Length: 50
Image 1 (cartoon, rainbow, N blue to C red):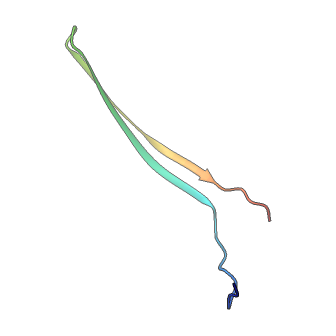
Image 2: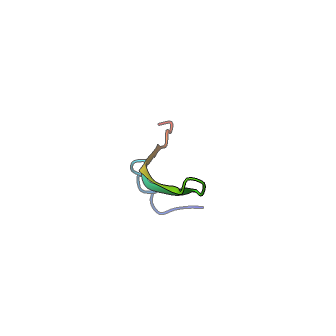
Image 3: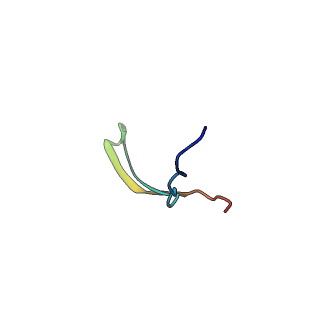
C-alpha cells in the first residue's frame, strides 16, 4: 500500500481506568448483614522500543 503521508504520532500509551465493586452478605443464624463498597483505579502503560 502507498500512503500519501505518514501516520500521525500515537501519543502517550497510558490508560487509567476507574472501577467500583460492591458486595453484600447475610448471616441468617445471627440475623446480621454486611455491605461492602470498594473502588480504585487500574493504570496501564505500554512499553515500546524507539
